[in-house]
Length: 434
Image (cartoon, rainbow, N blue to C red; front, side, top):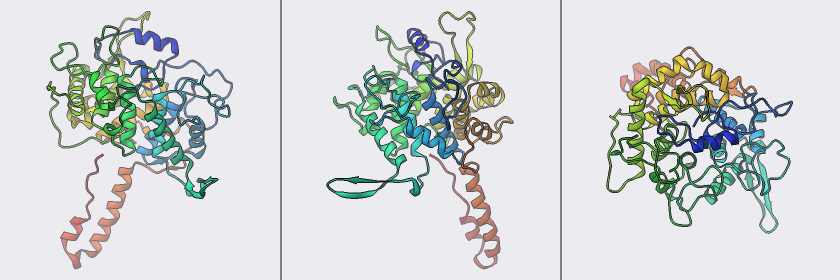
């Protein structure tokens, strides 16, 4: 899932490019640099400085999710902007320039934007002072419902209602299911603490049923274990790095800002008579590990009509691949790519803005790297600088946990003579995993 969205014309061109190249860009969550803003002034509270037409909600949501990962509370004006983008149905469009205008049948609703917005809002701290009291004519006053909680519930409800019969989701409601959109919704459901496999379509299919259909078998010599964005018109699947990273994470039931797991295990690809979501996800991780081993990063093929036919490094999908591998317990296989990102990503992140910094935060967090010193770059500071000043730039949750440990260590020293070494050791924190 790369940082920004493509224009409609580019989306169509990319969809027509059924390539088997590693890291091929899927249209569901990708984009080239956006054109200059079409309006004189960008909305107050919005992260980033480029035209938000295709990625306003997307980049805002990723910024929030990354800030939460780093222990930072976003500015209230930014939260209010995102809440104001939601339609009455619970869905989000990619961007609504006039939030005061009611969404109508002509509003192009965006499954990906809705999924990531719900996931980001779910982690926003609820201040009781900003809650709104809900009332009904028949039952009288109801308990206060916080607007963020209401937005999350409405968004999740809309996503479930937009599920296709095959169990998956497409970029827009009613469009054919694709691996990226389905994976985003699965990761969001997991972040909400729900069981994605229990969300069934009218035909009784789960999101995992849909994900499995995009997975290539290990016996396939062209991209063994990889996921395709969608089958082509003949039903053939083409390996896609973007889709594979997203589907691997979803197949493991993990949110976008997950932590890596231990112990480390060797990537394997195995075809089974009855394929499961976890098995195909691990096959996808095996494909990513093999792809990254070649150059340390994924590559993006040139767009149709490009003057330069040379494949370019794919920074965003490389970061996503790092997260997916860490979530699968393949940290050693992800480490060279993380090191490559530390060395080569600063210019890319500066050009692409908040969503790019967010992806690097997710990759560093998954691997347990220092968000404040990522190859010499303070990712949290750079991310915060793309939007309004946050309310509480506190440092990462891991840092806060270390500070708590230091306090108890000092207390333990004071009590050591009376209670012995056993108490002191018991105060040590346990490693945290998601």
